[in-house]
Amino acid sequence: MVEQLPSYFPPLGEWARLEPETVGFNKSALDAAIQYAIDTEIDWPEEVGLMVGRNDLPPYNSTLGPTKTRGPAAGVVIKNGYLVAEWGDPDRVDMTFSATKSYLSTMVGLARDREMLDSMNELVNVRIQDGGFDSEHNAAITWEHLLQQTSEWQGTLFDRPDSVDHNRSVANNASMSDSTNDAPAKGVLRELNPPGTFYEYNDVRVNRLGLCALRIWKEPLPDVLRREIMDPIGASDKWIWHGYINSWVDVEGKQMPSVAGGAHWGGGLWISAYDHARFGLLMLNRGKWDGQQLISEDWINDALTPCDVNENYGYMWWLNTNQELYSNAPASSFAAQGAGGNIVYIDPENDLVVVTRWSGERSEVVNRVIAAIKT
Image 1 (tube, rainbow, N blue to C red):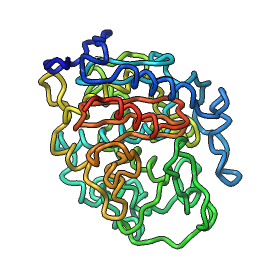
Image 2 (image 1 turned 45 degrees about the horizontal axis):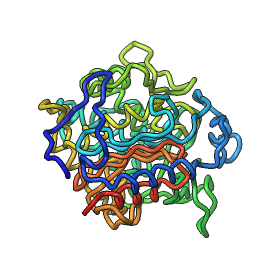
Image 3 (image 1 turned 60 degrees about the vertical axis):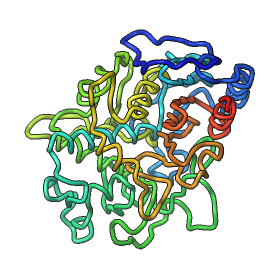
């Protein structure tokens, strides 16, 4: 029998566990989905640093930020706020690659909520005057363009030119690795398009957004994330958000680290599956945690609005708009996704959060978890 349960938000250091049947799962089917996640661990070496920058042309294939060894396949399933399944070591802190981008997006959203920014349609150079948006081309870039990866920003940042990710096509597969197709080779210079008219997954431009957000907040983004989001949702103190060895910048006379929006060249957010799940639960509840609105519902709505030139992408959140990412999932579901099968899948219709680490078949894991819900 499925119980009608009150909303639950886990306090610091705790997470109530329930038997899967209590919240509507077929336990044997869910157990099989978890075993599938374990059996399909991604074929990556334990030393994840070997995968960093591997698809870039020299000299841009070198590491700029720290890396660490990875754990085995791991994850959690959260239903109605309760922990109903876990595997591997969900408490282990691991690199999470581009799942970091969804946290970066949230930092921009908080800045708008605090009226540090008026609108995502505002030109970036209205407030950011560090030379990065002075050219005629870059001057037309808005905050929304950066968030949707349609900016076509041109320049070099932390020794990486924007062209290093030209022609990059991120595959819709388990690893989120760069796909191969008939397009020009990744890293080959191409003609730029007007900002807002062309989507390209480009970590140099993502890092440019991170630097802009740092200049708006005037304090390191990890400090903002901890104070505004992670501490209020009861996250551990073990997560860390890295930049690069050369990404320290001057902010009003103080040296501060500009963090990476992924682990393309190392760094990025290092975090446990449990802490990922808390962030996912916050998003599942439209930015509200146990009665406290940490980030506005207006921002959540905007962040989950499909981009005009990529219906499966919002403000650095992957959207299941056409149900290509997760075929068994509702079109309203969305996710933070990173290389290595690292995802935070969020499903409002099923009141569900699924976190996977080092999954070789992340979409199918989610599909099987959803199939285990009794109808």
